[in-house]
Structure formats: C-alpha cells, structure tokens
View 1 (cartoon, rainbow, N blue to C red):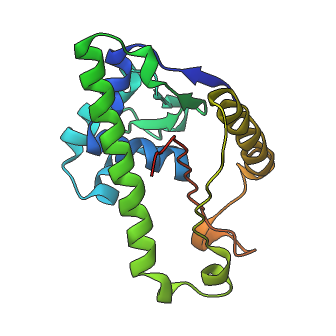
View 2 (view 1 turned 180 degrees about the vertical axis):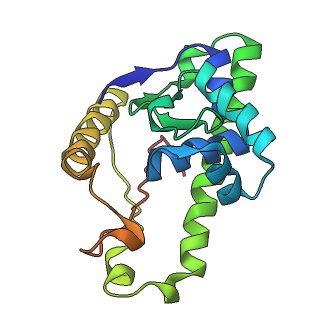
Length: 192
C-alpha cells in the first residue's frame, strides 16, 4: 500500500464534502461496491452518488472497477488502497487554506460523530468489544521533531496490524468475530 501526500487544494476538496467522505470511507472499509449498493447504504439517490464517485475518482481517491461488473449498466468502484495524508503547511494561499480548513473540519466532525455513535450503541455489541474499545488521553512534552517521529512510529505500528488483516472478512460474514475497527489519533500542541 502506497502513501499519497496531498498538496493540491483541488484534490483535497474531494474530501471536504460530507457525502464524498462517507462514500470514500465505505469503499475503504468494506471494499468495492456498486453505485446502487452505495446509494442504499447512504440512503441517497444513485445519480447523486454516481456524481460524487466520479468526483472522488477525478481526485484519485477511488478507481472504477469494471472487471467486477456483471453487465454494462453496473458501475463498480474501489478505494485506491493508498494511505492519504496532508499537512496544513502545504496550503499557503488564502483559497487553499479555506479548502484545507473545510476538509479538516469535516474530517474532525466525522471522527467524533462516529465515536459518539459507538458510545450510543455500546449495549448492542457482544463479547469483549466494550472492554476492548478504548479512549486514551495522553499529555507529552515533545519538540515538533519528536512529535513527527512519534507519528511515524505510530503509523508503523498501525501498518503492522492492518496489512496482514486487510483482506480478511469482517462484520457479520466473519466467522472469527472480526469487526471493522475505526482508529483515529489527534496530536497537537496545547498551552493550558
């Protein structure tokens, strides 16, 4: 799996739209899907979903998967499989900063909404999921260089856990109880 650094505000704009972000997450999490299947999952018109999928493809987040189609009318898409990253400092013009701010706000809102949704449905999870799920706050004293090193180390750990399991079934079809797990981390300087 490659790493893609996004520096073009037009590309980043692809993830600043909530429905596009949701479609991208679904394709990343559950694998290739048809336009109609995605439209059902997000409860939206297939024409609108198709438009947003084309925009995601233009920005390089997803690709068409015509080899999965059973007929010429069926449209399949898949996530590219690349890790996506970007930094605020890559966007220097006022217009680019506006795009970066909108994308970041949408991402943070989505992350916390997903966390809240889990908290509201905790009782529906069987087994040890309620003891395994965690929230962690840590306060470190680091330089900006050390924070960057920490990020690199955390990505290495995440890759170690993700890569050997990325093609295993998860959710209701998994015989071993494996589920999709959403992990997000935020690290930033703060002056109390």
